Image (cartoon, rainbow, N blue to C red):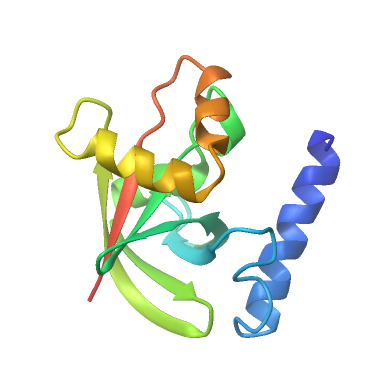
Length: 142
């Protein structure tokens, strides 16, 4: 997919997820996605993104891949400033606290395998596109 077409699809995916209150969007792209609501670090405005996740017990694991771009996704920068987020998983809405897991952290390898396997090894491909180590984000509801 070209970058413009991909961006348009991702915006549509997020819009459909929100507008249907989770009836559409959770498995729209063939893997589980959630809506991640962060607070803009400069504006304080609410930002919502659909993000692929894997479940690890009671937590949700995300990869801040930005499709393998050299810059991280804005939502990662936002949650570094404010780790309290809102998430929607299918129709369930909740607050969660985000913890960033960097390469070299004790749980990184296990969590990477979990979320990468869940996403058909796509994150391995994204990692080859950039020298930036792709951090993981663990969302703990509550």
